Length: 457
Image 1 (tube, rainbow, N blue to C red):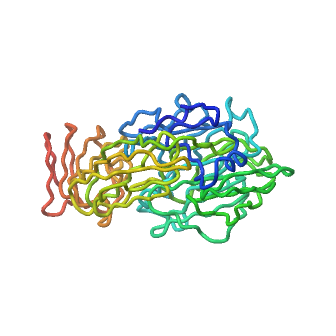
Image 2 (cartoon, rainbow, N blue to C red; image 1 turned 60 degrees about the vertical axis):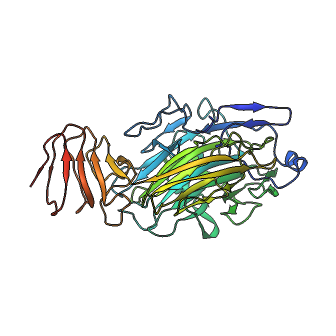
Image 3 (cartoon, rainbow, N blue to C red; image 1 turned 60 degrees about the horizontal axis):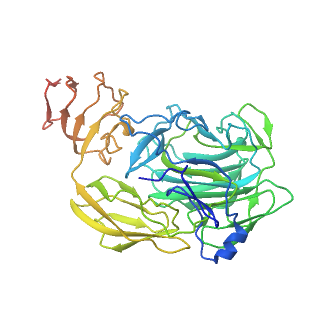
């Protein structure tokens, strides 16, 4: 489990954020250089780990009760993955309702302008929606200090676009709809860290340390954005930051004060975000990281798997200290994500370590068990095509789907089920909720079991 963002350790050297969510830059320079580049005590504006939520089935939407700086939640839901809680923004068809998932960068909300600062979050691309639209993306946007949405490209001081086509994932960055860095930057598989430094001051520059540990100076009226250690905008000294933006209601604003995620109405996207952090500077670490994430994990053959290493203070790199991961899985040494698709059943125990500028923490054993999956439908909606309502996160509605050719259980209380798919590819249907169903056009060899009668047409 992650340590909550709201837990802090204070020392004479630094105020440190507890939890893997403190996404600090990697530091390959002397602490003296670090102290001159980054304030020891960052003024933290937002620290959202989602650990205050209880995992539910179906997943629940974020609330202002548990996330006081939440402004709008759109279609975001809190889910559990690899022992951690995170928010999923899933708009799987162009016809589905989208909207903005936004937070204020001050408390009381929108009470304080934020002219310069640092923002980071983790993002994972989930399975490409089966009805994906070419060129679709989820946008992360730095917006005006007001209640308006971040749904318009013209409303973003910084606009990081996370693309999700059928093949290669990528990321681009814009300011008020003007792109910086002409090419699409690769978005690696698994969990990635997005970091943004911005400075709307037209007089004073801003010192920061980039994710590779290099001390930098951000120009006036500029921003710098990174995917892990790779620059998205192409210039560590910054690209031009718009002096003002036009909000969703047509108001011009030069005051920065919120962040948000959104998918345009005609497009599709399915991403999970976690450890959203915003402050006037990236936090610094003074102790080696100790791994705090679960020491056990369950995976399934032919089903995408993801496990995020969490630490008590932020790590800048991760490693396998011993053992071998199950076939099909690999470790991203920058983000600490173990991901892939297991190829065979069995179990493996590996030693994991995490490192920051102070040193490498003690190795922790992780036991991964790979089994044969059962895909359970437990959604509160009626559509069997909704991937988020299935236990492995994929509906069995295509021959290439991760949820296909499995034993399937209908555990939902919903009895009037619907589908928009032409076919489902299922080994067997099992009813466990005491309800009766009628399945139409079932091919020979189909098998339906359960405690109540289930008929065929």
